[in-house]
Length: 180
Image 1 (cartoon, rainbow, N blue to C red):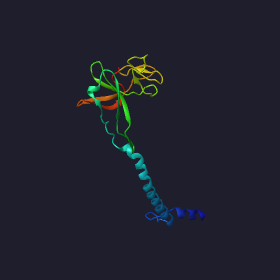
Image 2: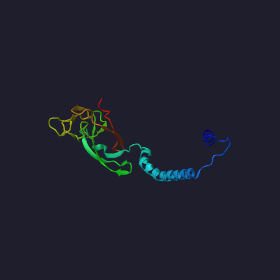
Image 3: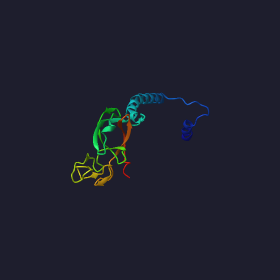
Image 4: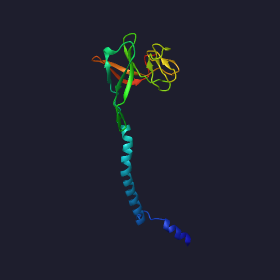
């Protein structure tokens, strides 16, 4: 008889509705409410963290640096500011570029950051390396066009340059294309 009793509870009649118990109703209601409240707290935090990543990247702006007439074959250092947005932090850091004309008269601009360990290079400041960029930290030196001659593993980086209305504008920084 115990066999019949155990089967009768597990067997259901086809088409019979299963009723929700009070315990199941409370579990579903509390679970749904908790999920809704948690989403209300978590969604703004996720959006705050992810929103800067989803913002469209703007093309780099051109920065007016110097009058074209002031550029010579001898590299000169010029400082300029760029507007920078990192997530929610906005700043206007001051950058530097060594700007000169090559043998054909074309203007180019180099970043003064040494490719060895990131020190700042200067033009023609070491008598042993005349007419070269020299890094005082570890002795790296470069040609006028930024080609690495010793210590540094790569040439100096180069800025995009455009001339407009008699002024030199600098754009994005990239690997040196002058040195081949």
